[in-house]
Length: 79
Image 1 (tube, one colour):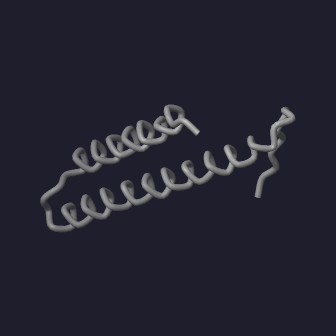
Image 2 (image 1 turned 120 degrees about the vertical axis):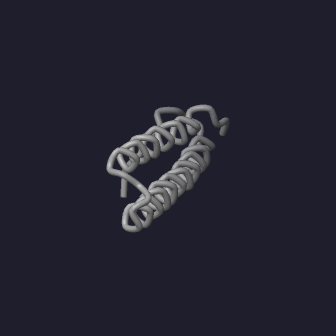
């Protein structure tokens, strides 16, 4: 849980804060799914001898960058 302070006299800001929270939660789950999916694929390929350690590292860094770019979308959303 978290506390939120709204420093205006506009109660409509509460609905906006809830919308931002819902959008953030959606993007978090997208990032988790993307990261787990790529890691499982690389793990399977590594177990079959088709992926090297460097490919796994590049995939991990790539997923981290994609997750960051996906999270930046929140700033561009209009609520």
